[in-house]
Length: 82
Image 1 (cartoon, rainbow, N blue to C red):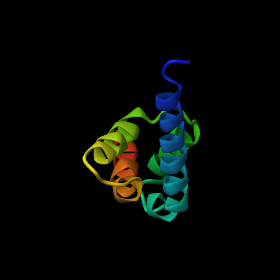
Image 2 (image 1 turned 90 degrees about the vertical axis):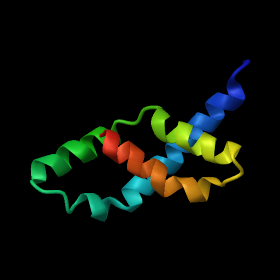
Image 3 (image 1 turned 180 degrees about the vertical axis):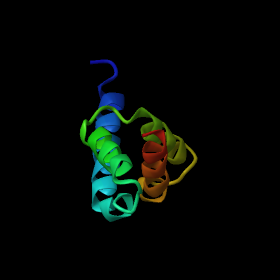
């Protein structure tokens, strides 16, 4: 497939961001009222492409950065979008 490398990169970024967010879930648990926490976690568990954080990570990579540098900011973008 013509775009397989790009699709693989999206999938890898989605996994990195999801794993980071769930590893840092104790941060989300401080959200009040509790209904916001429930909504946030429910949305994040749905999966999906997580295109916004992927674009951020790809831009960082294009400018010479690494995924480890971009990951916390990419996760924040996804959480803010949620």
